[in-house]
Amino acid sequence: MMGHLLYLLGNVSSKQLSKFQWEAQKMGKASFAYAWILDQTSEERSRGVTMDIAQTAFETRTKRIALLDAPGHRDFVPRVIGGASQADAALLVVNASNGEFETGFDVGLGQTREHACLVRLLGVNGIIVAVNKMDTVSWSQTRYDEIRQRLANFLKSLNLTEVVYCPVSGLTGDNLVPKSKAERGSKMMELAPWYNGPSLLEIIGNNNSSTNYFACLLLALFSFADKLPVPERQVDAPLRFVVSDLFKPVGLGQPVVAGRVISGALSAGVNLPTSRVICQPSGNHAIIKSIRSMCTSNASGPNNGNNIEGV
Image 1 (cartoon, one colour):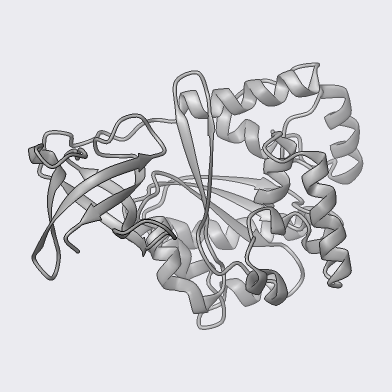
Image 2 (cartoon, rainbow, N blue to C red):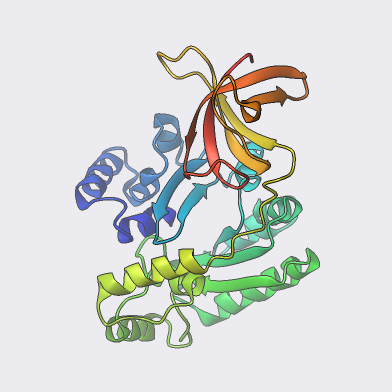
């Protein structure tokens, strides 16, 4: 679903998508072409599952938004935690297919409950629920209402009250992005005459549709990012950096630590106090040699990668 959304947003070109479609068809996985936009390793593609956090970003007039696509399989829960620990908001995607939602939601079987619990425990309060694969149940209102009611009761028990729901199809792209009123009205009236709500991006951005498809898309996207509330950052507090990954790029002597600044601030440079850090639980002292951040600021909030010395 996220791959198709990125394509509709223009983050992926038609040429790139055609390449993914050809490669997926060659491997007998034609329906996975959009998933391959974010699942880029050979193992992920051969197994047909997301195995690691895929990260991308887009800019608006005032913000740079980081999108993190997390695995859904139970074998990769630690990586889900790594991604959720860096999030300010969550998009929970559930499968509307007959039997698939039950498998993902019932106790002891799937990951829907566990993922919702994890993001709540990690401090995420706002959740958008995308009821995906509605095309497989012929856009049944009964099925949508059933899933929504079961999820609502569970999420309420987690004290998650800021929850909105949206029926979508990641494969066909229906109801992912706002289209013109005429186009969306006729298509959604045909698919789901019972649903007169907004598209997924409009829910996020609370933006009215334009008569021009691309203008509408950009307005909704920018509205989403510009209206997204920024959590209060503890810039003056002691530095706390949550590590999500550690790797050594080819040709670079020191390791790179990726993660998020939870509080405080850090800088690069031997002579700067904010470049000296303590690694836990070892207690080793290290120096930040360089910073590669998704944002210009390296105070609390942004995700970044730090080239460090002393680890």
